[in-house]
Image (cartoon, rainbow, N blue to C red; front, side, top):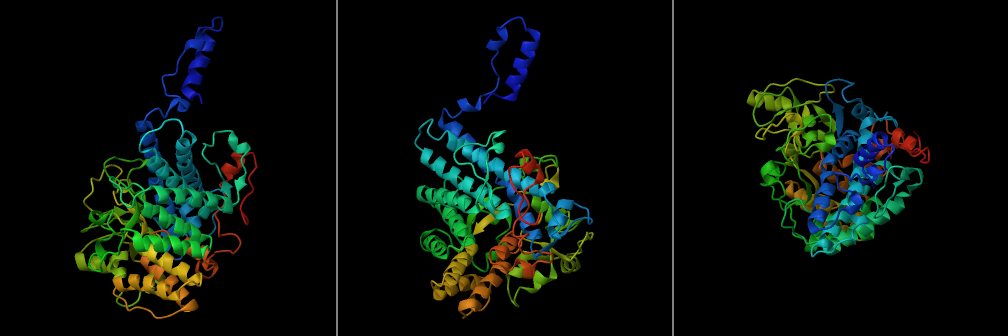
Length: 486
C-alpha cells in the first residue's frame, strides 16, 4: 500500500516534469506497510501499537455505567457532552459522536491486530507464538466490545479493512463474531503463561476469563462454567482480604493478585482534548471527579457519572464495599472541610473506584492524564460469572453458592443459603454492588433480559443495542442496515 506522502510527491513530480520520466525514480521517505515485519522488533512494536487502543476503552467503561441505572450522566449542564446525556436518557440516535468514537476506536484496535495477523507468516522468531497469542486476545477484546455495543458488525479475519473495502463487506451475524472471539481466546489461553515478565501483558488467565465471559453473554453456561472453574482452581489469582480490599483501587495496589486483566495508564505524558484516543492517562477518572474540589486526597473533576441513591441503597448494612465504592461528598466535606461545587444532576455521590486522586504528575491537561489503571477483569468477577453459569445452567447450585459466598464473605457479609431462581437473583444483586462503577451493569441487564424493568426510558427491541453511526453506514454506500428502532 503506497502512502499518501509518496502519492503527493509523485503528483508534484509529474506536474513539474511532465515531459520527462525521471519522476518514476522518486522514492518514498516512509516505510511501506507491506515491507514491514522483517525482525522480531517489528512484530513487538506492532503488538505494542495494538495494545495502545485498550486505553481508548475508558470511553466504553464510562458510558457503560452511564447507560445503566447505577449512575446519572451529570456534568456541568444538560448540554455538557450531549452524546453522554442522550445515552443516559435513552434518547441516543445514529448521530452521536461518542458512539462513533467507540466504533472507530475499536475498529482501529481490530485493524492493528489484524495487521500483525496478515503478516504472521512473514518472519519467524522464537517468541512469535506468544506475540500471535497476545494479538489474538487483543482482537477478541476489541471485537467483544463491538459486538456487545452494536451486535452484528463487519468482520475481518487476518487482514486489515482498507479504505474502499467497506463497500464489499457485510455486517456479520453476532454469532460469527463470537465464534472468532472464542477461537482467538482458546488459542491465547493455550499459548500464554499465567504470569508475564512485563506488567500489563495478556496472560492465560485473562484469556480464560474473557472466554468465559463471551460464553456467558451467549448463554453457553456449560462452556462458561468449565473454563471459569479451570481458572479458579488452577490459576494464580485470589481475592484480596477484607483488610486489603479498601485499597484495591488505589494506585499502589494496581496489578495485584486479584486483577486478572488490567489496562495500564500513565501520567508521564500530557494530553489534549483534540485526541482522546491518543491519551496515555485515564480521562474517565478526571471526568468522574468532584467539580471544583479543594480538599485532601482527591483532585478536581467534571462531576460526570454520578451514582444514584438507588445504587447506594443496594448495599446491605455492614457491606464494607460501600465505603470504597461510593464517595459521599457531603459527609466527606463535613469531616475534612473540603469544598466543592455541585454540577448537573448532583446526587451527592461519586465513583470512588475511579476518581482523580492527588499525587500524580498533573501533566497538562491534568484532567486527562490520571494514571489510574482500569481493572477490566477482577477475580471477584470471575467467581460471580462462574456462579451464574453454574446456577443458570442447572449444573451445580452448591458450587455456585460457594463462589458467591466467597465474594460476600470478603465484603464481611453473611453467606446466603438459597438455590434456583433465588440464587440467580442473589448473584445478580451481588454483581451490581461488587462491580459498581466498573462499566458492566448495562450489559449485565441487557444479556439477562432485565434492562427494560430497571432502566428508565429503555425500549425493548431497540435499546439492547446501540445504533450503527450514520457516518459509517454512509461510508459503506448504504450497504449496512441500521439496528432495529433507530
